[in-house]
Image (cartoon, rainbow, N blue to C red; front, side):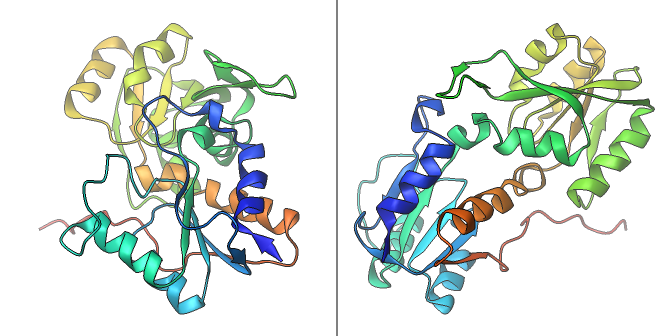
Length: 266
């Protein structure tokens, strides 16, 4: 019998909790550590449709990247979104676990997967936060090399590799060759990326003033979507669980997709 605790230990050996940001909330956020598990559903977000899919599949555990809870919970009732989700999980015997910024920073995590998906070479950690038990550096942003090319061509490559419905970009007036990547909302690291000699930064959730700043500073900035830049890591979580627990049924959520849609031009 596999337990929630054993799954937790396997995943957090890969992305230890000490790698997370101080403000973050990771780990088992709902459920019993010693509950038995035979089926696990992996998804980027603990969205309503993912919870319903878990129930339909008779999964006892959901593992996500984004946390179910970040702010303190004042009540658990059907009057709030988080309350409804917690009640649904508890009433259906489903545990919820997540790895968030620890998975962003971990070797082989979100940003290494993103760099690999874009075909970058000589990838390294920008401004390492420390080293893990194996002596490997960990940290948020990755920097690597790409064959020199025009920004428009590289943006098209990013969209194709990440299956983006579209990507926004600011043209810093440079060809692409040294690229930084930060899955999710990492545009705040722009000045650090520039200081490292990068000409291009791929991230998501970029604000208007950040695009403006990038163009003024001479940095190519690409917003490839929060879901698209992070979702590839779900396959890594699935692989870890399959290899660690051959007896488990491990499934990637089929109901989950980017909720952002691009309207057709009028």
